[in-house]
Length: 368
Image 1: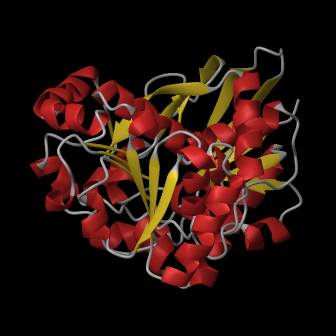
Image 2: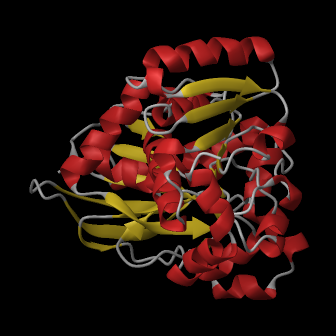
């Protein structure tokens, strides 16, 4: 049986209380610097992952004891060393492949340096994250009432590795894709690639823009995956009934959007159902037997017996995304809901957005 591990870390110091109650009583100014000296550790043993094919796997959550802020702003060599420490612990427990979760996949060169230092497979989980982001955007849009086949989708950060693959996947499924970025030359080149990669290219209009606000004013569906350090989507930018899938870390969508725009839906990607009687033995805020897509990719590869690297670096391939999609289907993984600002999107939220923006959505769907 191929085994896996997945590296997690506290988003901030409050997350430490999920595992260690004493952390609630230590001031942040003291606790965060202390985390640099806390060694990587096993958080839980994951059991019960079983594919319809009969393949099984088990693994571990491993804690990289740095917060998101530290991983992003500490010297890269310090963050990389801590991530490597976590991966080596995973290997010592018996993992054959390890997934880099959350900001551990963002540090440095997207896992390449980590993989070069490890004798086991390494993945960022980005391929299945992209696949479920596109699937989740379209599924959520249909629930809100959009006719996705006749919709316009804006891809913010389109010329990046994730954005370009999202654009290529979407071009087969919508009427119009607007590629948004900062450099016109790169956008023009990508537009040609999107047209060439799409089996439905003749049915989809591919355009480019360097103006975020103007584009959002005409795109009811949005994929946001820029590399900006500050939010790029504000409450006034979005159309009534807009559906935004924010794949970026740090987020592209400001929290003010959720607070001020009850007529739009922002999702972070899909919640993935994991096959079998899985027990994570750790509360990471998801319903039972569900996981983030990046976690799921690591499990999918383990079920397939894949012990090499996957989804590394800044250059993702459309083929790799489609391959992991096919493996997910083979092994019984599928979308099981949505998340928005760390919370589950329930039916009442879907109903609220649909009601508040009903007339606007009807207009978009009619192609007006």
